[in-house]
Image 1 (cartoon, rainbow, N blue to C red):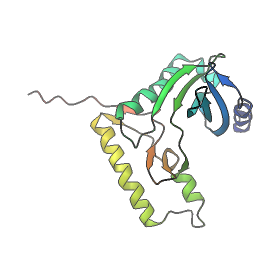
Image 2 (tube, helix red, strand yellow):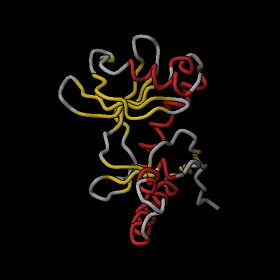
Image 3 (cartoon, rainbow, N blue to C red):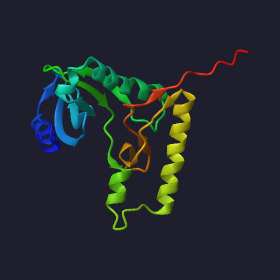
Length: 179
């Protein structure tokens, strides 16, 4: 499906309520596999809903891989990894994840907002330092992200780095210390 059609279809979902719980407030972004929305739970809690495109939700393999993203991210258990709070299926069969709602910008957005399209060195060092801490924690848990790019590194308004999208992460076998 062309990107414009995906965005248009995703935008039409704004205002829907998923599973009598999550109101889709605004469209935050659309990718090849899913759309992400700012959402509000019926109890007032805010979150981000990542909704797998309907045509992809019909594939068991794709659904499993999509849901696995949440389990892998939570396995890292580090404040620098976006927390996945819930998963479910919409009334029309689309699979979704509910994550913490972040305020800020991706590294890609930060760079594109600058005339030089580059971040200043002190900002790069601060981001890299936090990113290495997250990656170290992930590797200790046997998780290899495999899709690090500026769009998947998010900087919150208070300067904290959050790693997003563990969709193609790989779990390494933990080495045994028995000899």
